[in-house]
Length: 461
Image (cartoon, rainbow, N blue to C red; front, side, top):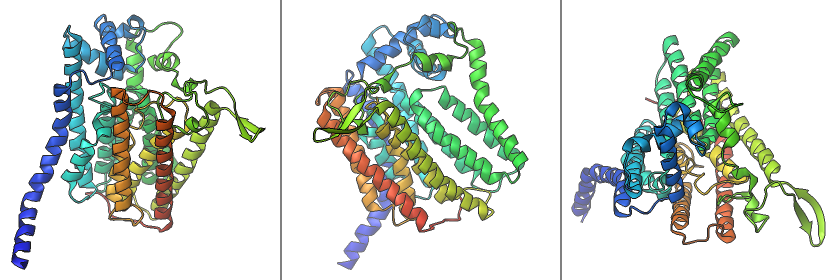
């Protein structure tokens, strides 16, 4: 019997790596298979918008914001949606939508490989298996390639930023390499700025990560000032070069100003099929977020709240607390004379990015059904990496996160197939309650992790 058990274990060890890479392959192929098998399964309105943008792009990219009244993405996002669609140049709309989504599925596949690389660098066990499972989660592909949206490209830029961060912190760097890191990080942040508005919350978090890098590496105020200047120029320069080559309507001086001023006004409603905290206070989810809501006990009104302004205040307060917690941790590293982030800290940056994305979904009005796209992959990377480093990021949390990703993916599927009413108050409240619990659970685990002074002084390799 022991010999038989040993034979089984040896067989498992021999074939386990192949099985894990099979999961990765399946995750990479799944969006292609779904798009091929169900060519009509996508969000018609979004893809139709990109098709209209492609006509404006074909008329001349320099005047795209004049020729296309509905173009409301920054330039890079417009290029990677309407521009790409104009190059595909297929008249049949259904065939055009399929080809366009195949291109987005390639990006989803690349994201899986990058996640595998990052997990490997974070020394996570069974890396191919976990990268494949993250890729297989419906929350990873339903809101991107299958839907017909370009958020996978934004995700690739975020992952590229973390690869750059890991490279820089893998060993002691020279002065030239430090400034190269700042310039490349700045350009990546600029590309994010030029891609799509949803990524702006991640951009805020990553900007603070870059600032933390400057604080950790710079030992004088002069060097810190020069570092900020180099990073700022790297962020602003690509935007400036584009604006100088674009034709814009009066009185706009930047296409970003035009996009932000004329883009969608989701925040003016309580919810755009998003599950924020405000869905608990009203029944009309399409109602104005600027209208005061009375808080009553019985027939007596205690006070009134305005969801739009209070949501912004809550978001700022929550993120001020998050920033303080992480800044304190960074300062601890600086006080220990470290000039590179530890593996533990880089994983916490993934957690920080995920919490920023979850916090705006819960606190701001007008949130959309797909706005959690940049939450689950990054929080799962953080939990997988911290699982063997901290008792507060354990298998229970991992199970809860996987369940949450499955529930969220099911919600996106139900939305696309109209299995639930678009503005089902019950569904949005249930999802809101779950993610409020999840946010509290993550904050508690983060605080306990910091309180335990768990501090891994190793750096990535």
